Length: 131
Image (cartoon, rainbow, N blue to C red; front, side, top):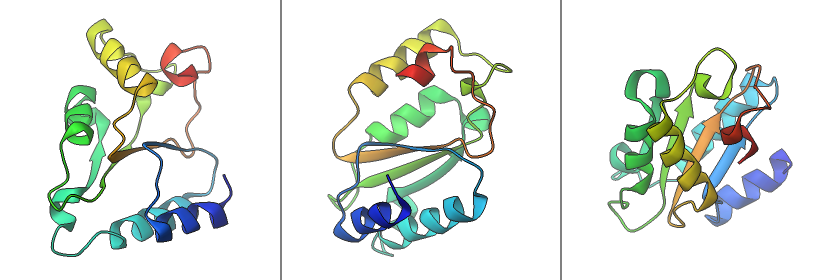
């Protein structure tokens, strides 16, 4: 998807359930994160826009966040930073990997999970990255 297409989706509030940021442009990632945050009503932003470091919270908590209903019946957006579980450096417990794969194969339709893997060396052999 091009940056222009993504901006249109944000404007029309038609975001996919799963978004994966890759590449080397930190500037674009930050710009899109700000656009996403500003697309949520200011009164509900603290609840419906979550930015989390998966290494601090864990994958189970991230999946719980993205599965939680939005406060204002709109889309809830969860951005995952530092997804080391997609690199060769880090792994998940089997139960965490199963939960993640289950979610990736059938994501919640009402919310968006965004995995920010910009500037990461991804391990393309991992099942979770293939999913």
